[in-house]
Image 1 (tube, rainbow, N blue to C red):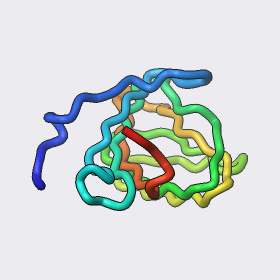
Image 2: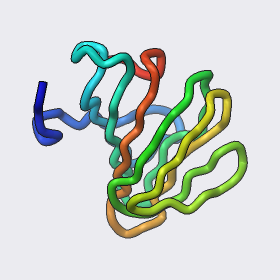
Image 3: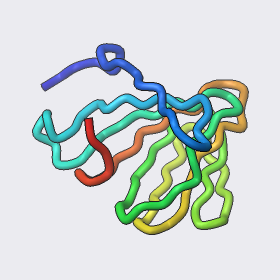
Image 4: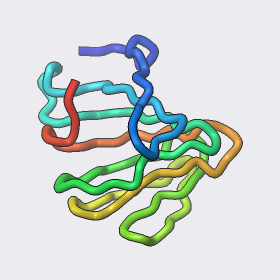
Length: 114
């Protein structure tokens, strides 16, 4: 299976404490992958919600800059940064730059759904 990111419709994230975030599921269980390979785009000034859950995240920043909060600590991120977030830790991404913050996010099967 090969496809391009541009073929996958971005889905605006909605809910409490979410602003300017879209998600694309690039690969998931329907494709034979045991988990989800996702791309998030956070507009300038936007952010994901502060939340926690039992599963881990592995993240790689493709472009932009911002802050990732992990269990009350702020870490600056920019193009090329990686972040691993253990299950059970509160976390959120905030775009502090003037361009979109775009990052890959890997989660196990329980971490998302179509």
